[in-house]
Structure formats: structure tokens, C-alpha cells
Length: 186
Image 1 (cartoon, rainbow, N blue to C red):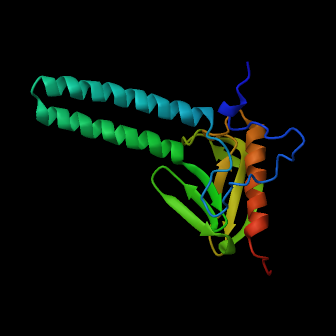
Image 2 (image 1 turned 180 degrees about the horizontal axis):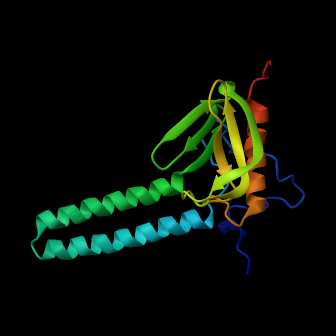
């Protein structure tokens, strides 16, 4: 029994164009134009599972009258939960105002007026963000007077073994750039 009201990608009308923006889409809001990949979601789920065990330990320690140790456990669980949420938030976000690359420890926001070029290139990319590199594709942002910044790769936690999803995400971000980036004079 299909439950279309529970899915995010249901078709509102079989004859409607799927690229048409929905009435409630607000292009002023920051949005990730793709879904987090299974590796990213699995990593966050494992961190949240670890946090639940640490919280359970904190509760047990609290009942055993070990308040200083329990507070350390609660603090550690809070850090693990924050890391899991930050891991889910990492990625490339777009809005009418520009493009935002959210890393685990830092965030870079670039206005569309500062974007010189968005392009997909073949280059060595990091495998799941680890130091090991493999040959792959990357969506690269070239800023005015800045170093190229790889926004997406086909070997990161969102797109590993999901080439079609990488292509869709790269095309979507390039389309946002084409729509909102002012005409560049070279």
C-alpha cells in the first residue's frame, strides 16, 4: 500500500513538470539541493547511538551519587550529539543570496556576485573526507581572486556509489548559479 503523503519526492500531479518550483518554495531560505547520503546519515546515526549509551551511563552514575562524573558524561554526550547534528548539516547550501559550503568545523559563504565559475571537473578527490585520494569528479567553485573550492565530490559521504545523485546535485547547483549569478564581464 503506497503512502505518498509520507515521502518527500512524491509527484503532486503526474502531468506537472517536476522542475517547477512548489508554491511554498522560498528562494531566500538556505537549502541543500540534494539529500544527505547514506554514509553521512549512517555516521550520524552511529554517533547518536553512542550518545545514547553515554547518556545511559550518565543516568546510572547520577543514581550512584557520582554527580561530578555524571556531569562529565552529560557534557560528553552533548558534544557527541552536537557532532552528529553538525555532520548532518555539512554540505553545500544555496539561496538567492549566494552559496554556502558548510564543513564540519567551518562555514564559507560566497555571494553570487563573487562567483566567477561553477564547473564539474575530473581530479583527485578525497574518499569519504579521509586523506586517501582517488580519481573522481568534483563540483568546483572558482571565486573572484580566490582559490578553487571543491563543493561536492562523487566520493564524499553524500555521493559515494551514487553517481546519478552527484550529477543531479551538481546540475542543480550550477542552475542556481546560472539563475542568480550576475552576468560576468571578462
